[in-house]
Image (tube, rainbow, N blue to C red; front, side, top):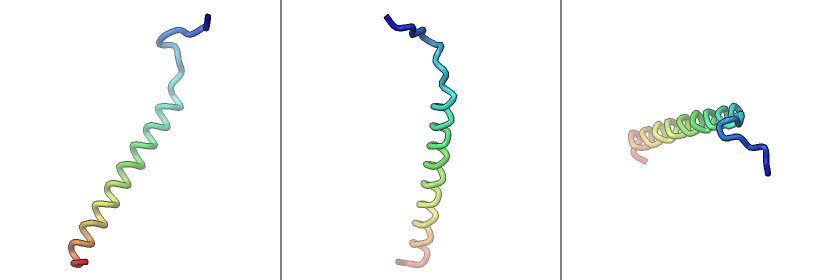
Length: 44
């Protein structure tokens, strides 16, 4: 059998990766919204 113990896994790397993904997604959505507002204002 394996030596797996529930609740004992180190998840710091996964948490850092997820935090980076959320930050990237947030910045992307904000940039897209700004681009759409800009396009709406200039009437393209």
